[in-house]
Length: 223
Length: 249
Ligand code: HEM
Ligand code: SF4
Ligand code: FES
Image (cartoon, rainbow over all chains, first blue to last red; front, top):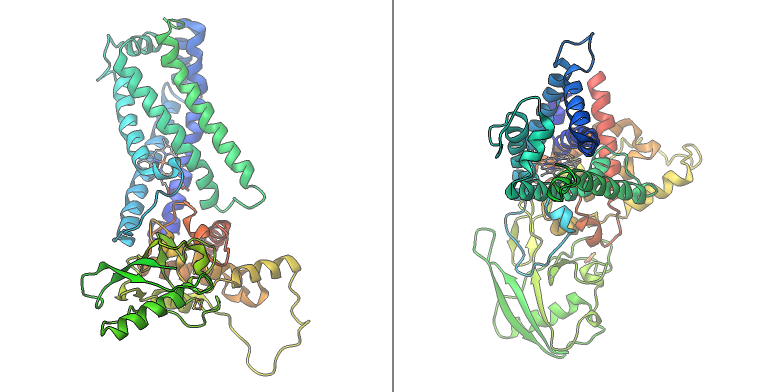
């Protein structure tokens, strides 16, 4: 069954849809967690610490966190690999363009590929920035998530990177969520409007929720 | 009407093609698009030039042979087949671009004619039912619920023209294949091959070099028979169901 899935264009698209939805689910939780920054360093850092102790005493320190990280890495790799392979196939299937061509499809639909690449680069940057601290512009300290975030967004380019990436995310989800429903065969004429509405609401909430953090630091509400 | 036509001319499959410009005059707005091209071809023949090759057969919107991309739209500006498109959709003095279907799986044979035998092979892979031979069966022997019959009829409308492929930025044949799969998969007559049909037809579609679906919806906008985009969703559902069943066996 795994072979049938991966060898078929419809199957590979299913891999994209499932991995995309896993990432989406994670992002909703991530965004809600981020908003705790508005309740001060104590609460935010306590939350960051809790992330490492979830599941104890059944799980050891950081086990749950690592489990989530593994699932996410698998999802990102599966998603990006299928995206690359499907896109190659699509481009090969349509080698010559029309002389008379018109702009087609919505902006969100047309930007899935380049938007996806932006998101992929962003994911790498984000991990090096706030998880490992490798590219963090300020004084990065493990265990001080709040201070690291404030330090990060005190630099203009961090703000630009995060805000651009989150706008790309919103567009990606706007087309992606609805698409995933079609790929998984749960879309229908009756459900179409509802699915599009949920896609737009998710896109808007995630973008606004994530952007609220750099905006909070920039305006001095979070300091 | 007087028109300027820019037409894709290509000697044969291997040759390089290019757009050639022609003027036609005395076109009536009641002519069909193909009749307008007939006028052009008579003109070309009289002047000793090679007439423009284009596919056509029934000229009444049911065979799916006609296949022109007109000003960037498969079958032109109206939701109909090229043969049912009338010159009243254009204005005197217009310049009209006429190109063949573009897709790797539909190579150009000559001018505006492309090879659509890839569609035949998709049909051969599963677009049939195991028909019992002998006398015609009694009509009430196999009841079909009204909703299913309507669904099957809606998909049976596909004439296999390939406009969906021509319009798709990925040269995908998902709308065509879904129309054929859905038409038969919903009916009791198609039930014995329900799983193999969708797996084999999608497999053949991939093997022919058609692209994948990115749900841009261009296919459904171009389809002269109004096969809707959700047909693809439905085929995906059938494909996943068949894959799950095959996995259990
Ligand atoms: C590694 C970075 C990423 C790349 C390269 C990427 C690329 C793509 C591409 C090319 C598509 C297909 C678009 C289409 O078929 O029209 C897609 C679809 C999708 N993406 Fe991403 N994306 C990335 C990250 C994400 C993230 C972080 C999410 C989380 C929300 C996500 C969610 C989705 C969903 C739900 C779909 C729809 C799948 C479907 O069409 O069935 N993607 N992505
Ligand atoms: S689905 Fe529509 S556009 Fe595609 S082949 Fe059938 S009739 Fe033509
Ligand atoms: S010529 Fe038969 S559909 Fe146009």
